[in-house]
Image (tube, rainbow over all chains, first blue to last red; front, side, top):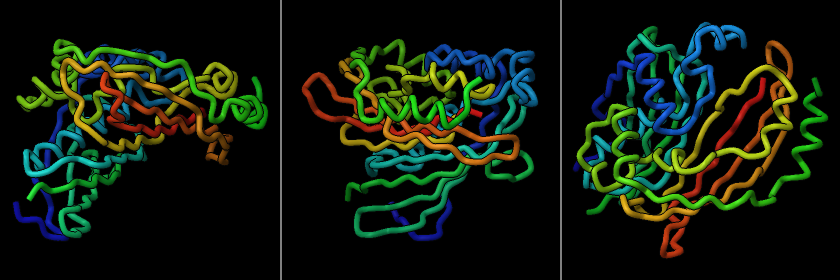
Length: 130
Length: 139
């Protein structure tokens, strides 16, 4: 695989639903009510139920592993959550190569809401095989 | 309700203290349900755990009841995974976590309390497979 600094990797658009939040809550074992209980979420000042930060991290993980395939291994994966996202809206995951040093490649990854605001930003480093 | 300074004082006494180890098997059904929940159809996850799966094996934060006496809710500030070996279906993973830092910051509607957690994951052969760092924010 040819990797060049500045190159964007193929984007991934996810369509999270309230159903998916419940599914994720069960699969992760995170039953914090802000992810499925609308009145509770509003009672703590949120606009409604919101996506788990770790679900957005998983979306970005999929973005990176889809791109990487068997060409290398993930070394580090770091994400910061900068804003809340609601189900029912598409979530666009993107990434760009920021550094190539021999077999070590660094990517900037981020998730955008419908307005293009980066509500999750992060970095992945990978070790390429060949 | 307590202040962030009081919460910080209480949580600071636990910095570096290991929580109880949690050991859990990486079950194929659990990995499949996790992959379905995140909507990742990659067949690779039939044998291997996806990058964020480790958070589903053990609680990723500790000592939160003290912090819950402050503020009205939790936010996840961020996560950092460092990988040393693949986590495969059939592995038996042991997670050991600790608080590594606690501090506050002024937010737009009052102080925010930040608690940094770290969890180390080892497999059944004693190999370290990953380290997770997480920032829990109480607001």
